[in-house]
Amino acid sequence: MQKMQKMQKPSFKSYDEATRYITEECLRIYQEKDTTPCAELVLHLLDAPQLKMHCPQHHYLIPAAMLTSAYKVQGRPVEMLQADLMEAMMRAKNVLPA
Image 1 (tube, rainbow, N blue to C red):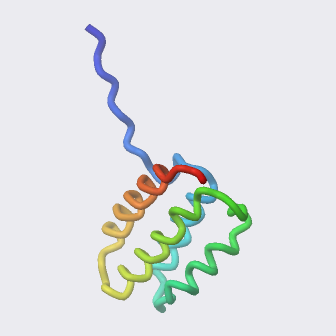
Image 2: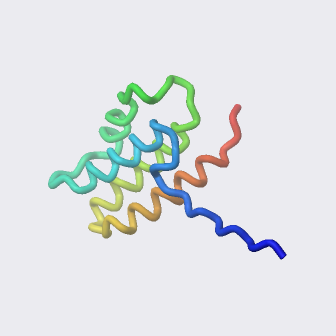
Image 3: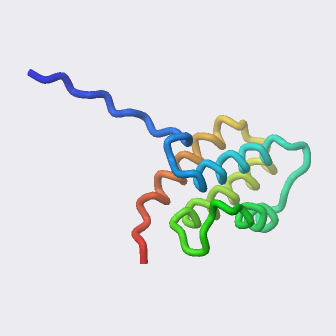
């Protein structure tokens, strides 16, 4: 009988450049001293050259910015943000293209 292969847990590094950028920037900004308003964070992320005008990463960008801003204000631990960014990323991957 063939052994079942372990499912590999997804990581932020296993995804495209734009998704990695969004995640890394959110985590970097989260750890800064000052708070960044959500709208300002969205505009900052949208300036990334990795993001094309019409791309599926926008389905991740907005929840990522909202989570980052809210968790920063609420003082939640970075580990919680990392876990919830992963969840948002996985859910965004399931949004069907128009």
